[in-house]
Image (cartoon, rainbow, N blue to C red; front, side):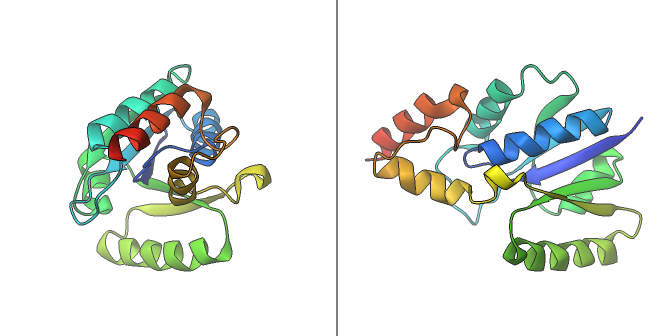
Length: 161
């Protein structure tokens, strides 16, 4: 059985993330969307909220499920007995960072491979940070995040003030 981990903070999940998850679900028997619980960051959504948002968006994809992790990604992969990590790339700047991380992960765990999946061209400009900024100023979120979570995002921004 082929299994891949697609890690990220997903704060919030965007249409770019969902596009990659959907494409991975057609390639792998199982896709684990691994939500990073990074105590060094102060995300808009809690880890549990991010998992709920992702699950709203992937409910039609039976071979996709979400889990949370903290610490090293390779440790999480080992714990799950998974040898494939997939990272999405939007731009060259993503590649530089992700390439460095892939080399470090390979050094830490030579049996785990990192594969890169290029974002679809209509999602290359989308990032969670940009989405949060647009939401903060009341901009249109159509096409940026899945319709299922637009209201969740707006409500969270309103609560934060």
